Length: 271
Image (cartoon, rainbow, N blue to C red):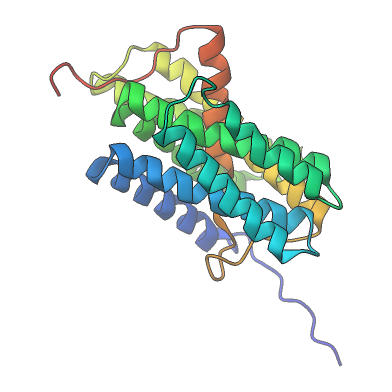
């Protein structure tokens, strides 16, 4: 007799959520302790791992391609950050485009999600260089606050699903609670004297983009027929599973900053 799969309780995925929060906080601690070039190096490594995971999900038949694309993406990101060239970030187009050419299936998925990964990584390093630690810490705080608040409220109160076809566990109650959590995170930076009150309005928008980043990765996994991006974190999935929301949040900051000045948190003068 075959054993029936064990059903997850309401809080069955709480450990994964906690791991995500711990990893995000570890990145924040890394940024505070080391900062600068070391943060850029961390982004290089994470970019390579996420491109590897994406290739692994979108074309499951050729492990050599996964590894090659991951190493190539990390190398290009390192080159763009370490050696300023007239082309600027344009070489970052190469890994997604190469993957598009090599993929036997899901080529467009790899192209567009790969572009999102490299653009988000480059944006994070650019934000760090221009705004120092506070803007990175704010971005992480918004993502973590939105995720934690959304998870607990959504699990406790339930209600209508936000996007049931792609992410059946997300509810409107949790989604909206996440916006309030992000606004609270933004308010802490305002009260600390790092930004104006416009940051409180901006934070829920960035949280929404983070939620869309999470949903986008869920869609890629459903299309690929996998539960997790990889098994790099035993029992808790892969790097993309932990940083999908940060990708969406960073891209939102990038797009909005091209359209209008943003009230981002900044270091104190002389601090």
